[in-house]
Length: 97
Image (cartoon, rainbow, N blue to C red; front, side):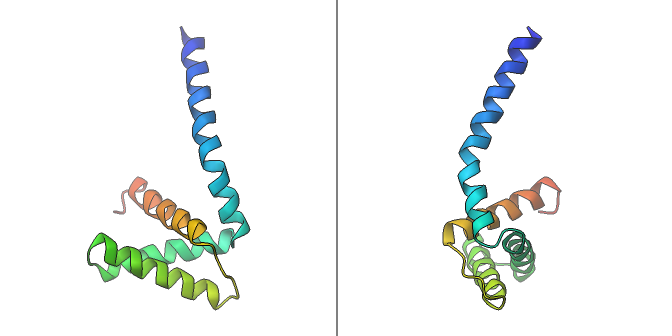
């Protein structure tokens, strides 16, 4: 029984990570750690600003893009959106939102 459960979990994790792997590679190609740091800072600033979810998303996007462009980094929107969503998910997981 435990082996079946272990095999199921391995398969499920492999499927999830296989699905997310292309996004992780896109984030790495578009600034990597700098993109993630910009996303975290942007999410924090947007939370402090307040407003609707859409308002905070727009503010976070603008802040992250500005921060990255000042460092000469142009980022693909799908990488930025993924990094912002990851930053929000991490804040929720840590009980910060």
